[in-house]
Length: 331
Image (cartoon, rainbow, N blue to C red):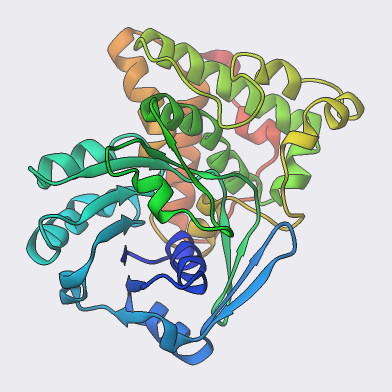
């Protein structure tokens, strides 16, 4: 059962259905209508392609569809976590396992608070999915889903050949590491560039490196030990990002498999005039900075720019690195 099926939820649910799993999607009427008309066409960075007919998946915007769920994969935006928790509490069986496939680090504590006595597992989705319309969802970056280890070995039970899921004994470190890498979501949204093009330019990588460095200072002040979602340790990543383009392509680019047209989910949110998750990414860093008397000027600047873009409702502002950095030297 996927609760709040957007891009990630449709891709994950669709791949599980293709593998023969019984899958239900709780989604908005617009998403349901699209799948009913076109089915799901799922493609990947590596070139895989699958089609799932709408009849292979149970579709509904009525939360009573949760009644027979054995596992609920939560894929709503962070701001909607409290609402989906109430829906799960009312409609899902008490023994259903709840797995949060959401960005950020605040969702699982909230789910556990609202769902006492239930099994709630944290997870990390390393890849992004692009909704291309007409039921097409493309996984544009690489990596395996990581799920908090539990006695029932939920990760292994959910894993398929096309969608690997592995268990972790340090899911908190994994989530914090992903949060630091996800700080690029807002940078990419402000740039309007495809991710590969953005990361192929040293000035943009330098901005990302400064953002990771600022984030590392904050999480270390909080006493958090992060686990890098890439083969490169997070403490070393900023140094590699600042390398000249030619050296970067040799040193780090092979570890960052990205489709040429991939963009961040926050870029998609701006383009579709939707609320972003900036408060759950850079906003987390600024909150930690406030608790520890740190400045975090880049995070604060990016929060302001994203909120401005949300308010204008004109999609990505397509800023330059210089425009994003404007005024930072005064802090």
